[in-house]
Length: 71
Image (cartoon, rainbow, N blue to C red; front, side, top):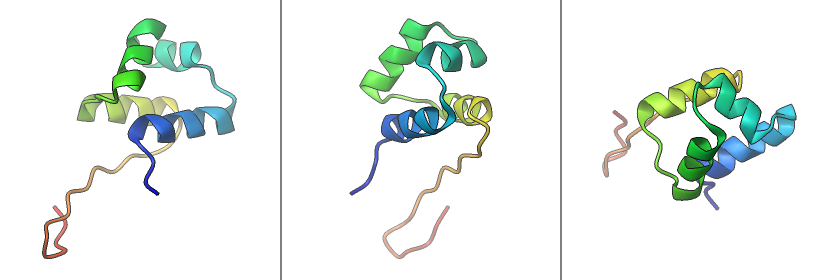
């Protein structure tokens, strides 16, 4: 089973004891805006990088071609 980006973010937030409001503030957005992005699951690459920094981790965006090659 693969977790969505939003589920992964929520899992990390829980492990760090961080609230949605704290994460929103750390990334310079409103809680409502972050909550909407989490509900829709529509994150830009920039969003993911900012969220990972605020969560104290790294994020890698990987594309895998049908032949197994990664880009």
